Length: 72
Image (cartoon, rainbow, N blue to C red; front, side, top):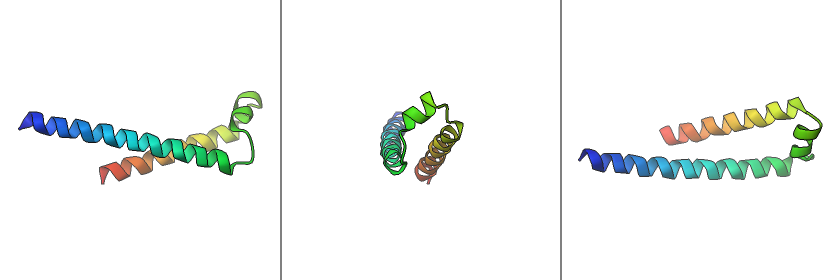
C-alpha cells in the first residue's frame, strides 16, 4: 500500500515537472517573439540590467503559476 502510493506520487511529480518545463519553454519563446530586441545581445553584450530583471520576474511568475496549478 505504502509503496504503491509512493510510486503514484513519484510519477505525478515527474509528469507535472515535465508539463511545467514545457509551459516555461513555450512562454519564453512567446516572450522572445513579443520583445522587439535580441534578448541574448541585450543581456550579455549590452549589460541591460532592466531586461534581466524582467526576465527574472517572468520566470518567477511562471513558476508560481505552475506551482499553484499543481498544488490545486
